[in-house]
Length: 225
Image 1 (cartoon, rainbow, N blue to C red):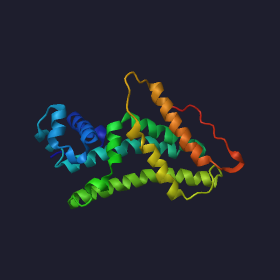
Image 2: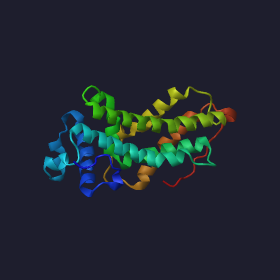
Image 3: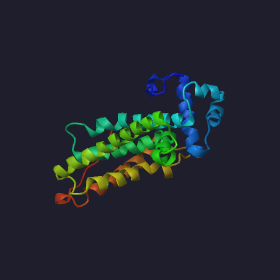
């Protein structure tokens, strides 16, 4: 049994291939219907090749979820903590990049939206429950990035006073729901995806700044992804 919690960049090519196939299987079939055989068949290997890296379907599901959280945290953390950038601009940048991540890594991101607790709570052993708690903590860490920037925006009077805990969840819910309605189209270009990401980011930032002091209008320039 190989180490299964290695970062994606450290994984052998076969393990990466398995994880990508698992993300596709869970997306297409859901956790309940997808099987180890399903994953193996997608890339033409035996299920023993899957068990070489992952003890169970649940462990494989956790690995896919962990990979999605790695993607998101690696991309969004520097945007949230950027110095010399207003909170309103940081929120726009974060929403913009998050939307791109939803489209670029659609299978992985759809797995995270399926919900860990709904599928797995009560069906896990002690070791898996520890992994589940780790993933919940990663999700909470990601949410705190948005909470912190919103709080900083309130302090700077860029955003009106609000209950941050009741704001960040629907904000992330709207961003994550991209995985439900977005479907790549034949002939779709990077400009098409950029247009979607900018529209979603404008929607999120405008919602947060509504009612802000002095009728604040937030400029959202083109950003490098």
